Image 1 (cartoon, rainbow, N blue to C red):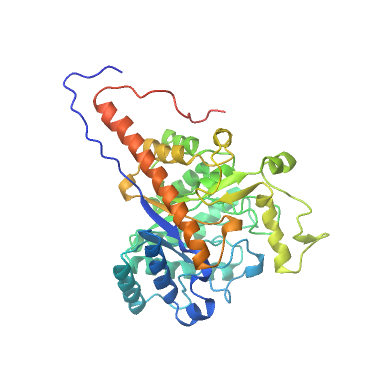
Image 2: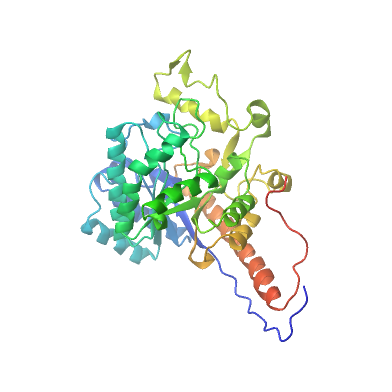
Length: 419
């Protein structure tokens, strides 16, 4: 690269992403007996907790109340986290109370997250979940959020191609509800292998870029293309054997790098021994969720279906896994610095308007005690903020300051699609 004549120096102005944390990190911050009787207390308590940790935003976790859910809590990998209780609509009175708490604490709400199967084959169950989503959309609009976050799901009675047709039939109406409220629905791409005791590994069809594109094309046909976006979580890419740079490059190559609208900051540490035993795709027999040829009768035994995933990997809370350059190159752990660089280099985002939502699912550290968990979350938030600031500085220096003066960037760096 030669230095252009009369080059105008560019100012060094790094753009940092906005920090947030998913409230599922501490479900019992407000004890169940208190939040059941006073639903919005849980949000108030989390806003105050975020302020204590110097976290400027929260992502509110919503879920069907345990008394209304179709999957028993004992069968779940994680406890039920319904920080936002929607057994009753989120009306103006509730909205004003939460908005007042946001103003008092100075903590914002990035969006609302609900992770359930919205393509369930049972018509009544699916209708109940969809009614819940509409209430969640109302809550997001009342709080001034730009989006909600969740899964698509999978109809277990249909093929993958059949699920695309089913998505068009039953999910498009939800996106039209989002459009009417000026909201996006951001799909998180977890394949949810342990969601059922069947052997399907991919139980959420929005699990990978090629499928995001297929879903988006359907949405465009119905005028709701602007409503479908992706809430990208690198932990699930690692579970699929992918790395963020290659995922983002694929989206750019295909003209869909506008799809990612936000990030969950959660890692995955692959167990090389587990992969050697079972290969990617997970454990498929003698898990403990079946008794001979019949499903286990106890919900806690059905939770063993998650061994399809946990035999291969363990979630990482950012900052808790060792720095491991070899694991980064093998796509067996998230290379956080390159993740943040690649997002800026390849995606159609404005970093200053993009949220990094720390999601805590590292099992040994999922402590349901505020005093014990607070320094763990604070440390992870600090790590995430520091990595993003480093990536922002590198990007601004290399792609703005040096580029404006025609000065070449040194070295090669990590390359997409390279094995």
